Image (cartoon, rainbow, N blue to C red):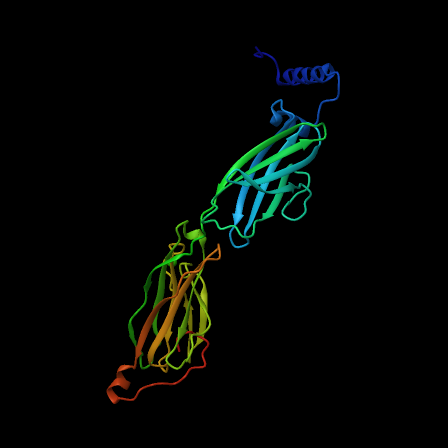
Length: 306
Ligand SMILES: [Ca+2]
């Protein structure tokens, strides 16, 4: 229908139509914010929805986030926790920007219940109901449930480490400690994997060293040599595959004997595996074996090997 009309004419016509539409309003237009809120209310006075219900196993606390939209101002929002149809706790949720609430006035109300003494293995299915009251006396409720499962530690599926290594007369001997670790809820649940070692001259296990699942990206040790520098990464082959690695580097003048290892893994939920033990027998270099002289020099190097 606009064929033959110039662009300028169409633009002028549009302006007149917009002006007429505005003039036809008998009151000032509502703000965009109000319009969005009224659309979301769908004709209701108050609308409540539970956005999040989580349980922090290490702290024994429930966290809730509830969204409330209301035609009138929100007077209060209350939450109820129930188990086996009995109410265990009531709390007031706030949209005040305090504590767990990030932004005041964004219609998201937050609350925490410190539910000390709950055993998720026994009390597993919890109900939560939020009720919002407006200043005009309207109210609405929404509920949800959460199934708690006892937090699980990671699982050390396998240790891959050499049983025996020979020192070299002149060069450092390199190898890798590897631990294959999983978690029933996925690799993201693994916080860290670490080991302690007891070298032949040690009477106790030493400090913990983390194994890395970084694809060998990080330089962990820089060892100055006579005419060179030895830079050691974790020797990890693939990042994020659940195989955690740590380099073994044996100094030509290092100790011989048996080094014992203790591996453990920790989940973000605080659960930790039992110790998995392994050992490495370090034998003298060929020249020393031939002369029958054993090397046994305690090292001052701050590494778990020498
Ligand atoms: Ca890996």
